[in-house]
Image (cartoon, rainbow, N blue to C red; front, side, top):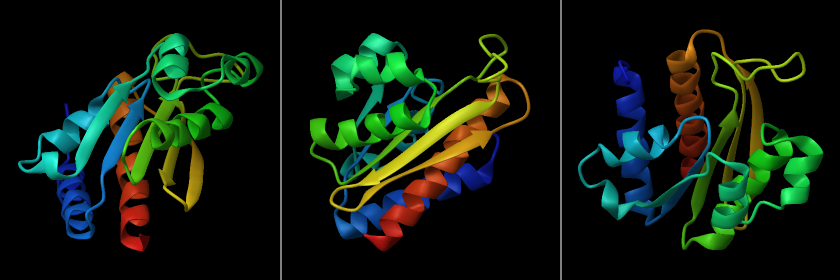
Length: 165
């Protein structure tokens, strides 16, 4: 799936930084279906850093696996800044990790609306005791391109958090 040498290089760099600082990571993914966790775990030695990955494709999974309040989803929709934040912080609450990344969006080709078009993706990154950042993204391209760009941004956000930790 990933053609980019830069993505693999960033994954390796993130894991190296986290291993040196003894940081653990969890991912919470919806529209990427585990691609971020898969990229990270493709790197030899990743088990020293990657603690777990949640694929929370359904609203029920978001609630059951990482504690996203169903009322929050009802109020804002699964594809929202609020839900991305709750996914990232929920992973911190449910796993013995230091850093988390969450991804929720509309990868397409169907499912988009005028308010939430295909390519709209919210990506969250959280660090224990350091808060959470959520970015709204509008990616162009087909389903694969949207998912790959989502992973790219999530990696960059995790790299920034790890470097500051």
